[in-house]
Length: 185
Image 1 (cartoon, rainbow, N blue to C red):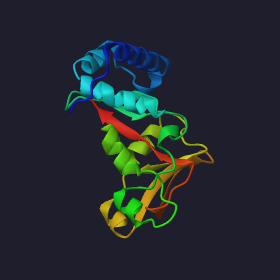
Image 2: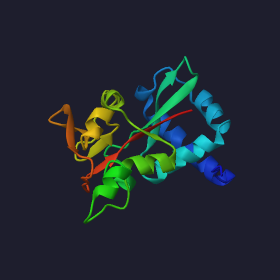
Image 3: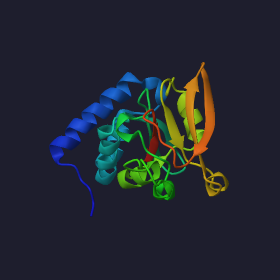
Image 4: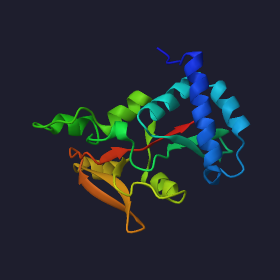
């Protein structure tokens, strides 16, 4: 089943995305909104994914254009980790491992359901060059397999004007930890 927004919701979302794009031109120097919009209108399934990012308060915005693949890249650019994606452990394995006080979901499950990818540590650091994010919250990032195999997962935040990467048990979850995603269109 494909998810397509009704026309009125598409138009409203495009207005929100355009306003954010225009307000934050420093995130996408040299990129034209008209070209981004044309790409979005030609990929209605991806527009639905952006609506999910928006619904969960991720505030998606364009952060780069990949010339090799002819794709625009959106990241969640909310100041803090998206409110609608907090209090989740890392993945399904971690969710199943919790015997008591299980969270409702995991970051990896939610990202898959939404159609986005968790930011990698490298992408997270790139995001932080565009502004100051996660000053009060933290965000799970895609964890390397060798760390995950040992039961851990990594997350990042910004404190003391410095970006940090930490580790935690993948089954942990906190009200102030969510995840950020990316989408290529």
